[in-house]
Amino acid sequence: MDKKIEFETLYNILREISTSLHSGAHIEDVLDTIVKKSAEMLNARGALVRILNSETRQLELGAAYGLSDQYVSKGPIPSEEIITDLCRQNRIITIHDILNDPRVQYPKEAWTEGIRMMIDAPITYKDDVLGILRIYFDEPREFSDEELHYIILIAERGASVIQKAQLIEMQESRYDQLALQTEKLSALGRMAAGIAHEINNPLAGILLFSSNLLKKAPQEGTFREGLEIIMQETLRCKAIIQELLEFSRPSEPKAFLTNVNKVIVKALHLLENEFRLQRIRLEMDLSKQLPDVLIDENQIEQILVNLLLNAIQAIEDQGTVAVRSYVSSDRKCVAIDISDTGCGIPPENMSKIFEPFFSSKAKGTGLGLAVTYGIVQKHGGHVYAFSQPKQGSRFIVELPIASGLHQEEMKG
Ligand SMILES: Nc1ncnc2c1ncn2[C@@H]1O[C@H](COP(=O)(O)OP(=O)(O)OP(=O)(O)O)[C@@H](O)[C@H]1O
Ligand SMILES: [Mg+2]
Image (cartoon, rainbow, N blue to C red; front, side, top):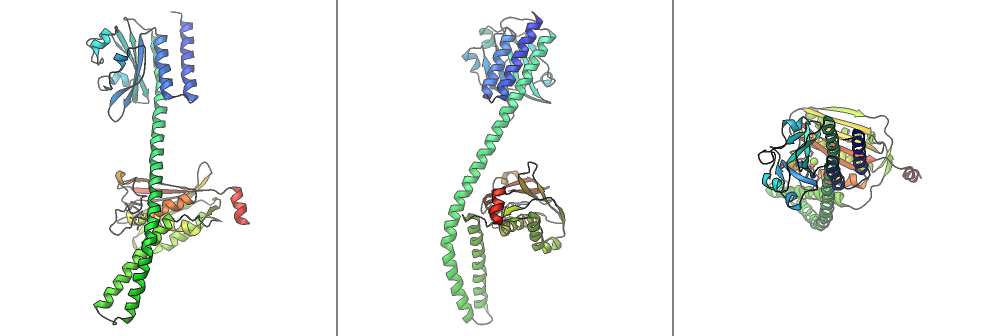
């Protein structure tokens, strides 16, 4: 075989794969190119790419070329026999004994198909096997080291393709989750607003009549005590309703250009006693270079108090709460990062913590984070939660840095 032509062929194949990978072609099309070109380059009958499903540990079909539909339509195959140590070492494996080699899942079918030899090239990234490129031949043949090296190079391109596919899949599922979460929250918000509105009036009635009765009640005794409890609990309901309305109120924040550090210091000041009583260490690292952002100071103070209270409540006995402010790396947001060394959040609760009324605390209403989410959204920002059970949690609030137009409007 003329090596120069061979190298040119390889070069063209690699270029074709890279171009389609970077030009936004569908992943399936790029995999199709890989199987077709590798079969053509080696004068083979056909080729398959199988991708490892990390959950089921099965190798699933990614692309096929040159094989009958009947042969290709066989389902996913278990990976244990195929992903061996040799595979992990990125070595090509040659299969001569089609009928008896354990790596061949459907030996009879392969034989009937006319296949007399196969080679497996692992598709690896670092030490992980992502899949396999299997090439099928009508008759046994030998390969030069150079040819084997070329096959490995093509399989390496396969790794980039599979990684890109997995990244897209992960992003899509994250986006779907977020969209669902947002939709759920806004539906709950509308419902909460309706209920809150309806309940507010009867509560006002209860408060009015019980306070009238209290005026006439004797100074001591169970009657007065009972009335006082009714009033206290009614006031608690009103506070919850107020928070609910806050969460669902469609009003825009009353925004002014403000330095976020100032609001952080105010919120911490409010909670000074809590920190002292629970002997919680406070670490502060506030950037001196923060640009002012367009925020409703009261609302942002409220969310900081919510997050700090959660952090304090998560720490059972001593611990640290760290508060940081900084400009995000893309310089589009000011970020506030509140982390604690508390109990952490179990993974199964992570998707629920921003839902109204989700609480793991005996006396929690479960509105703190829902309100926080609503306020941050109205500010055009984002809130992110990270947590490791028993290690602690971290909440990051990002607030967009105001555009020039906004700033002028606010100054005017
Ligand atoms: N820093 C944190 N560490 C551990 N768990 C947390 C933290 N922040 C929130 N959580 C979990 O998320 C849940 C919801 O928090 P959220 O602030 O919305 O409600 P809550 O604190 O239970 O009640 P409240 O309405 O009084 O704030 C909490 O009950 C807790 O399980
Ligand atoms: Mg809370």
